[in-house]
Image 1 (cartoon, rainbow, N blue to C red):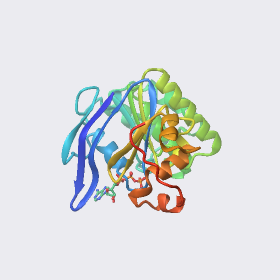
Image 2 (image 1 turned 180 degrees about the vertical axis):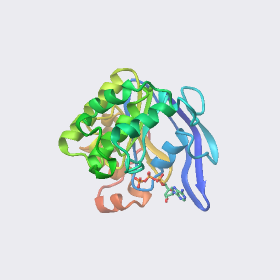
Image 3 (image 1 turned 90 degrees about the vertical axis):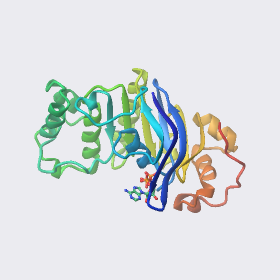
Length: 253
Ligand SMILES: Nc1ncnc2c1ncn2[C@@H]1O[C@H](COP(=O)(O)OP(=O)(O)OP(=O)(O)O)[C@@H](O)[C@H]1O
């Protein structure tokens, strides 16, 4: 369970996250949606204790999460798949993380198998495609078998088979009772994946509910249209490109 209360982050004059309160429950996939610059990554970084909130609190299973030894056993996260040492092999990268988090070495082979990178285990990460890096980032998140998992734009660079695989993986992780939070700026991606959605714009919560609830509350035919409508006033490039949709009011679903 992740609980945010009045979470706020300011960078100088920019308010990236603005009094955000939400609960992410275990046993379901929660989609975290918002246009570019809405504050998704900043929120994920505050959940992980990488950035300190300017105000408000966020807890993971009742306590603020700090990076610490064995942290990967509590929370696994894919934030930026490009943020890895390109000179290392996939297995060396995962083994370094496992060692630092006191995770048995046997997990390295297991997660490489799980993400479909077993054949690339000894290859340098520098030669990996974006999709392979995403898979490696997912492997790192799974390494400590954690009860809470955060994924920032996990589908970037994945081919259709990869996208289908990730959707299945998220469903399995949720069915195992884990807390799964997945950020995306594409509502359509979440249509088949998320049980519950949090929609933010300019750092504030615009709406939350199941995909059906969001469609009903916005009286739209698809989640994509619902998203356009909910974010129409946030000044995003996507909302502007969507154009046209009448605003019917979004509120909580
Ligand atoms: N370290 C930082 N210093 C200054 N401003 C920042 C910093 N990190 C984020 N911001 C600003 O905070 C706002 C929210 O950014 P954030 O990356 O959290 O949004 P996002 O929803 O993840 O966007 P995207 O979908 O583009 O990844 C943006 O205006 C961004 O420019």
